[in-house]
Amino acid sequence: MKKILVTGGAGFIGSHICLKLLEKGYTPVVFDNLTNGHPDAVPDEAIFIQGDIRKKKALDSVFAAHSPLAVIHLAGLIEAGQSMSSPGLFYDVNVTGSQVLFASMQQYDCKKIVFSSTAAVYGNSEKYLIDESEPVCPTNPYGRSKAIVETILADYCKIHGFRALALRYFNAAGADPAGRAGERHEPETHLIPLCLMAAKNNGRAMSVFGTDYPTPDGTCVRDYVHVDDLADAHIAALQYAMKATDPAFEQINIGREEGSSVLEVLKLCEKITNCRLKINFKERRAGDPYRLVSHNEKAKNLLGWEPKFTDLEDIISHAWKFMEQADR
Ligand SMILES: NC(=O)c1ccc[n+]([C@@H]2O[C@H](COP(=O)([O-])OP(=O)(O)OC[C@H]3O[C@@H](n4cnc5c(N)ncnc54)[C@H](O)[C@@H]3O)[C@@H](O)[C@H]2O)c1
Image (cartoon, rainbow, N blue to C red; front, side, top):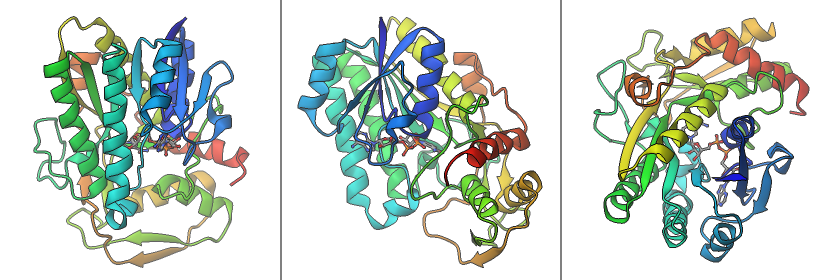
């Protein structure tokens, strides 16, 4: 069995990656403490172990029992707003947890890893399309925790011979096109599911934070990439890391190369759900960069990856299909 350790595999993105791994003939070994994951999001054919990445003994026993070929490391805390009030928690889970994982990988000679990084490492930029040469300048502790882990990984590559790819995702959105998985963060803080939940619950008001940013309509602009495309990018990255013969570390953007403002997303959600949303306009939120849009050239050249879902309407429609059937 070709086993791949997937930390955080019971979460939104991890559950879609598990489906892809199974399609490609790998067996995902999901390691997740379920703080934000769902046991029923793990496909039946995957192996599930409940545990915390900060606990080395627990991780060691997974490496000893399963001898994974490589690791896809998604486990962590993800909410940038929460990181502004609880930075220590983010450094503990995201940074300390990653270090414990890398130590275990080194001990068991499993040195190939795809790491979930984020566009939040960039902060504000003058350029519309951000490429990987843009300075790392996060505006919140969440982004900083990911930037620190990238630095640690680069050292593990140089010093311990790891082969690592840090995928800097922009905003993951959508759901499995076949409806087998979708987004279920609790509490939900992401714009698209919040709009869809508001539409489903007919009347819940939406908050829009900041209307005076230097963007065409004054609201923040983000790049939404389909979670199915994101899962494909992981397979391509995994295969790249497994083929590499020399120690290597790469940071690679994964987005759709198209920005959408908060108000544009709200309007599309209204169109797809056929529901008028109530909007509360509020002050800017601390730590939010005004615009993050990906330049994907490196992903195309190095991994041969490009998004299949180029239309945001399709991405939101898949999320809506999942939301309609889910109990939210
Ligand atoms: N969702 C996005 O748009 C986005 C964008 C950029 C980067 N990312 C990164 O992708 C990864 C996955 O994001 P997601 O949206 O699927 O989030 P998620 O919260 O759905 O998944 C994260 C998973 O990690 C698990 N986890 C948290 N702390 C853990 C710990 N100490 N030990 C073991 N498991 C733990 C949670 O239970 C959860 O299942 C995260 O690392 C996140 O930072 C996400």
